[in-house]
Image 1: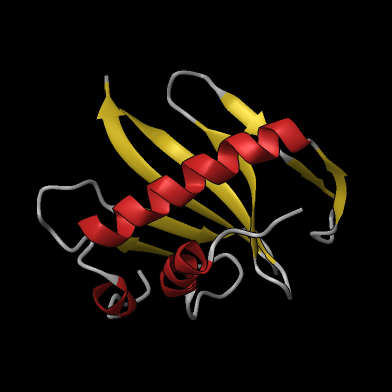
Image 2: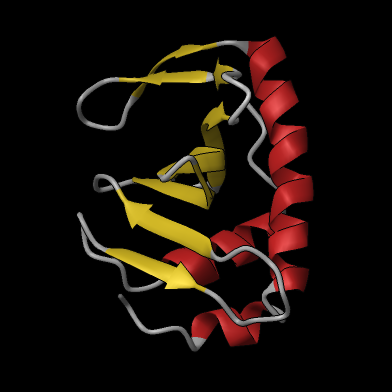
Amino acid sequence: MKTLSQAAARVLDALTAGLAIGGARKVDNGGGYMAVHVDRLSAATYSIAHYFQQNGDMVCDPDGVFLKTDVGWLPVTLQLSTGHYTVAIELDGNDKPTGWRPRQYKEISGFAAMWLRNVNQQQGGIDRIRQVTIG
């Protein structure tokens, strides 16, 4: 299983730096783009999401869960507001992969690379992302 590119990994590292388990932050460097919400779910998993409001409810679009390993970042799941939910890696309660779906992994890996590239541009680059304080 191939990890995400070094460019995508740098963005994820900047977004998740310093977050404790259960911690969260919102990255919003202006420019008219949607803020990026980052949550540390467990020792090695993180949720990265954009949210918009619809009929008074907050809706994620997209919401990706990523696994940080010793060799790099792996996309685990992807959820879109259209109801599309893709599981590429199944994890046990200790963040250890127990199943892998190659076709789904390829699909969400490609999306994650494009999305993280956009997040980096929209938020003013990695250096500006790193300046965000934990919320």
